[in-house]
Length: 246
Image (cartoon, rainbow, N blue to C red; front, side):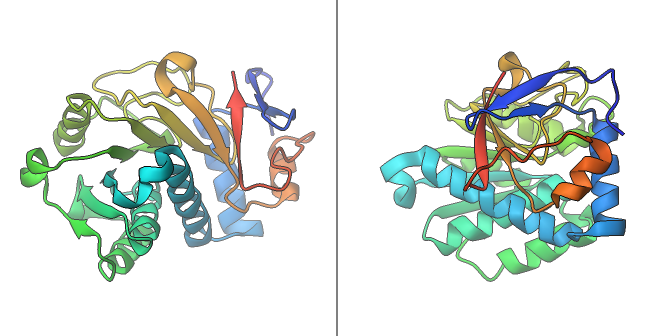
């Protein structure tokens, strides 16, 4: 159930108020969907990745087809969504480079997305070669809302690499390194130009850490949302993502 401690709301560009949730509440919404009502994890991941790719194309404007996009992806659900976005971009002729923080530790769903990506024109780049990459857009899909401590190892290395580039960054769900509940950063973190959050905005998404904010529909039924947020109203109108105002 929607906790009274979560009182922050956003307003979609359709005029609908959208409540912010904690990482624990979002985890419960995901659980209900996967275990009880659907859609499956792979279906939600596919919806997230496709929306992320379409938003990236819109944000790049007329130069999207010739743009170089670097996707930084973690080993879990957030990474799977980023890999999926890379496939959709590559299928449309965009030059995509994918760098995985932990390629040997991918979740089952992320591994499936990686396998599909390998049949596109996109290129997987090892982290030792990341300094050679040029980018017009960086997509951050390293951590998501499940951050537990300061990023370490390869994840921290990729965050540092992105931070040294004078390139716009589009983050998926929550900028990597940002606590989804507080908005704080226990260590290295991504500073995005834009963030596309999924299903419901997270409490820690703030103007100073998320940039311009969008909300994507990942296919969860309204009745499932209302198990958590009884007064939930879909904010999308005739679209699959909307802009959010703080």
